[in-house]
Length: 121
Image (cartoon, rainbow, N blue to C red):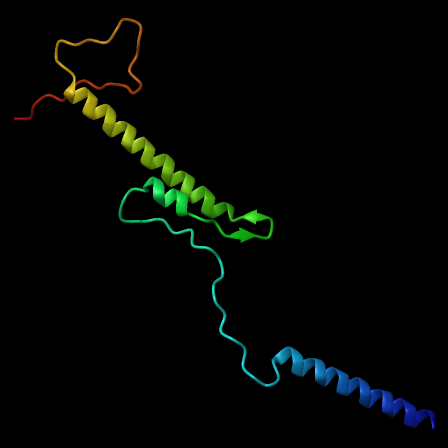
């Protein structure tokens, strides 16, 4: 009799494991296709980033917060673009300045002003 009870329990355990496997597999149906549920952190690559782009950007969450590489890449690009804009503005201000206008004594321009290049022959 004890061997019969052991076989009954063994069969019950196997049936329970088979039931769990069927539930986990979705009752024989194939798994649903995976989709990317991360928010888009895309910013335009073909033009400078506009303020509206920054307002729409969302970073995906990782185990302990945001993906640092995405944040670092965006911050590096923003810093680069701001440097370019500041250099362009300084260049435009230098070209639009009147020739007789001089800086006030004791004030330095925010960016180093290079002397004009000599004309090439």
